[in-house]
Length: 329
Ligand SMILES: Cc1cc2nc3c(=O)[nH]c(=O)nc-3n(C[C@H](O)[C@H](O)[C@H](O)COP(=O)(O)O)c2cc1C
Image (cartoon, rainbow, N blue to C red; front, side, top):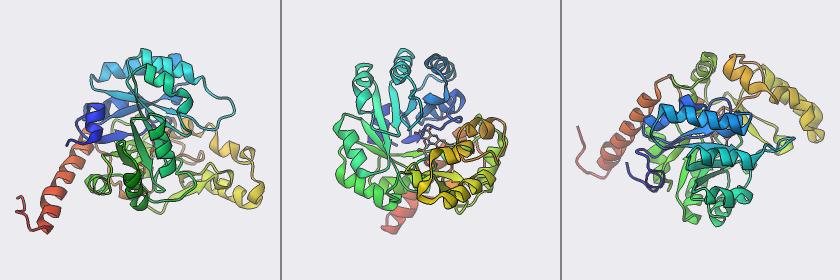
């Protein structure tokens, strides 16, 4: 399939694997890129720029296809050394960066000087337009359904994507709630040039996380996510568990007086315990409503081939058939 996104990134299929803390290691990024999509290493999961350089080198050994690095600008108590991370990405020969969290404006000169294509992930049309204005090459438009940080506007993709299409000139991918060929065709119909998936890629053979995490996603329904940290305006969509129930209880008790320190134990340092040790009640970890559409743990190649096959059949048979065109066997 050819779209503005496949052209921009030099990939076969318009499918991107979003950055995911403690999931986006070289194994997953390489598997996605080898299957014709765009895999992303999650920059800040690597504790130092030197470790990120090693992870990039490891990924390079596993694929000769393009891959990228996610750089997340989140409110943290001590800001990571972003310029050094960008230098490690540039020196590693990576030419695609997914930014998220806050505007990458301050880092655009460095990213552009290094010849990078920048795709900024954001949750509103106004932030997407800002990304376009500061020179981003594309945006990833993350709807309210998404796993991770959906922002505070609560706009689902059925509205957000066509609104983005009305306003943007640069290409964009649909993110949040994407799982299969139906999602891809719907995203294209709504004006996107491809799709970005997070949660779906965790439930794959190559995702280097504990099997408990994959099974929890397969078992979960679309009703099993919760929004935490709303009162802090740092909303995160997570899979419900005992730790999450505790956060919600604290949020109810504290009301508007809630401070990050009140829930710190349930949100900090949770990812290695969940993703590596498989402790499913450790606390809050991001997961999308799309869990309700995930019923198996295929290889990344099987998943991407299946998505592209479904998309092809939907377009050429189901949709064309509705127009009275000849239906393929
Ligand atoms: C476990 C997990 C961790 C994530 N970590 C990050 C992150 O560190 N940085 C980031 O920009 N997005 C992160 N995301 C968001 C994804 O990149 C993607 O935007 C989101 O998962 C899309 O929604 P979906 O899960 O419905 O596909 C994370 C998502 C999940 C599920």
